[in-house]
Amino acid sequence: SIVISEVISVVTSTDKLHEFKDNKFKVVDAFATHAQLSDSVVEHMKAEITYRAQHLMENSQDKSDMIELITGKFFPRWFVETLPDALFHGRVKSNHFLTFAQDLTPSRDFAPPALVCLLAVHLDQCEYETGEVVFQKLDSAQHMYLVLRGSFANVAIPSPTGGTDAPASVLKAGGNNVMPVTTLQSMEGSDPWNSTDYKNTDYPLLAEAGCPRETDRVYPYRSYSSNNFFGDLELAEKSRPRSSTVRCETPAGLCLVLSKDAFTSICQQFPQYASPWLVLGRRREWFRTRQRRQLRCGMSLKGLSALRIQKHWRAARIWIRKTHTVQSPRSGKHGTHEWLSMRPPAKEKGVDQACMANGSTVQ
Image (tube, rainbow, N blue to C red; front, side, top):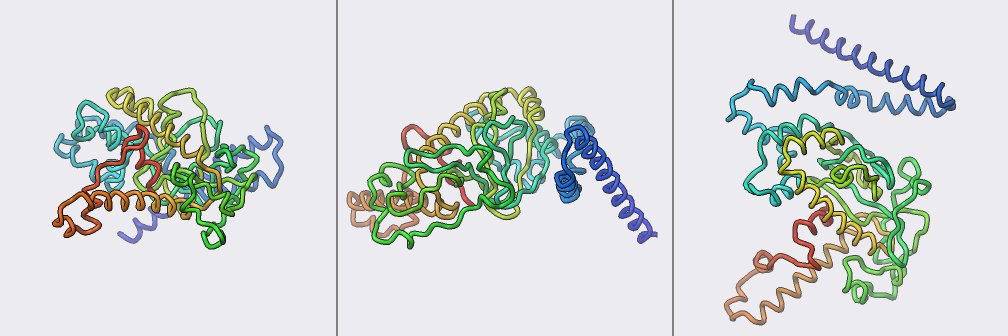
């Protein structure tokens, strides 16, 4: 009887999936007739639906019953308080979208369990391939994204005067926009680390050191990896189109997606978080714009990350040497990692440590 029940369950699930795909195919056919699409475009649309059917069906479920289950009186309060650690294996609770905003609220101790549970109900999982564009500049903002796996990045066209957000014509389908890795070995006869521009900015002016200048390809300049988030400011400010383009930079990128309507509903139920999310979004947008202006030469995400790690490491090493010279002989017993732990938080042109961490996290 157990085997028979399992077979029935599998058959029923398969039938629901086929029914879901058939309904979507009918919508595609109706849209194709209305918009006079070619057969090749229709086949491509159906192939994408077939590939993503399972996730689409799971995300199309009515969530009103889930919200009633969480906000109702079905569970004791002590049990609800334990749920945030179990929701998406605790990844929602630890995401910077909550932890950074929590520091800006009157009660800085912890996020309300009801907020984390309600947020988890509205979140949907979405996978991305390498080079896939999540959204592009001037798109209508309908979602924001919490990163679970992989790395995503703002991309732009580099130029000697700073990066330019990519137009739609540059963003080709598939992985054609994934850039080759630019290595320092190709920059023979130059020392980009000693560049004056490198010392004065977070992004070195490698174009003068032999790095090719691209005018028709986009490159990353700000990254978002595990526990980070992006696409929030346009939802918080309302009626604002996308100000930049975001692309998946690694294989099998995975995000939790929050819709605009769900974000608005959560802000209404937890108004103490609406203002911190807006402040945090504007702060991150300022830092993103600053990094885009420093995009003078295209590099891969790994190359960009390596340069920034090198820069911060060199700054830390200089601080260690200066501190070591003014300390007593006893200070020589400290190891490098101990000196780094004692280094005060970096302050750079009014940008606090939390804001800087958003643009430098790379998985």
